Length: 262
Ligand code: LER
Ligand code: MN
Image (cartoon, rainbow, N blue to C red; front, side, top):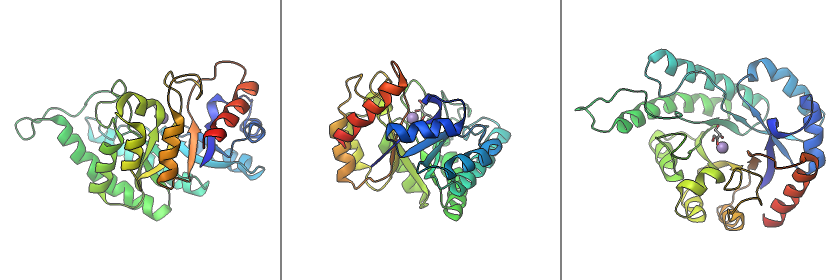
């Protein structure tokens, strides 16, 4: 298991400065935001070429909404995710973090054809992921479905729900990721859920129960990491959290803490 960190929480005026810091702190990877990826592709490529730090993942940042009410919004999401998958592969990253939709349903209730709008949303999502999955298989970067807690999305809150979608889609490069902050709210047993998702987890986000650095809340990372080790997880775990203090002191300390648990 390798440690990574999201670019936005690292001090530094340029991406290169951030990457030097990340290396100095003891991380192995960086997760970049997908919003302006097309404009920054060359900058990221250049910055990565001067260091041992690898791109772990691209965090969403696409336009539209895979489960938007209008066709245009769904088309934009598919187009933008494809663009980010291609760039992620070019940069050597694992994949693009994909949240099927934030907030509540936008697709209208289609009763009496289906009595729960979520059934309709899942059907649309599966068809979209078949198209995206074929593209992802071609370029060699994963779509990483991220379950979020109930206050951020209504549809996929737990790992097993994301795994079920992947099973129905049946594409090699449509997999899931596990975020400890969301799991702490939604999973009854974090370690058990990780083990049950064996073969599907391709990325991990780390934050404690209060979304501060691991160690500042009450999540039992040890048992979660043991479960990841048990299922042979070898990919990145990226920090997605706030830093309560001076990053130059807090981040190396957090790396030492996490390494002592891995
Ligand atoms: C949002 O809470 C989150 O965890 C992000 O990774 C979503 O892109
Ligand atoms: Mn996350």
